[in-house]
Length: 202
Image (cartoon, rainbow, N blue to C red):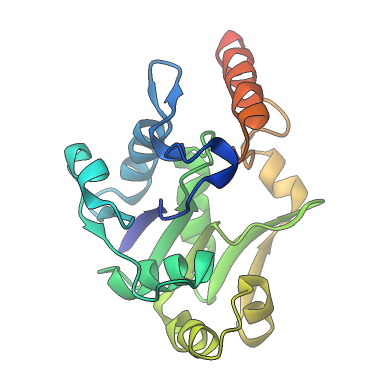
């Protein structure tokens, strides 16, 4: 079985504190698009949210869990997602990735079979928050959180990694450069809206 988790615990300081997951995006919000894609990808598996403000996400009909390790940033969110997941493989995505598709999420889950983690690697580097993580990674993530080593990428050297290369990523893109595009700033949000219009015009 496969589950999926959306990490929505960041402070969004570069977006004036606005919750990135709740930003309008097309005819819905970013998290609406993510939930639809992930629910299709996992079938009967659970989709849940990791966030410290449960009241914001409970209206979406999902289980909301708080970070197990406060102050650990993205590592804490990832650790929580893997630990709280009911499945042996968990698709984990950041809440600021509006273009993630069901097809790509499902591909990550399939490619994670027999590996500790399946994650994209593009010219921008690794994308650990758009990846599928095995429960077997939990001890390593917990060790790093306990010792204050918060860089997720550094944990990969201790894990069996299935890299999804640029060519494989490109197969899932209708508009080049959109699949892993993330929204951290107001400028990137405006760019995402423009890309979304282009996406649907095709």
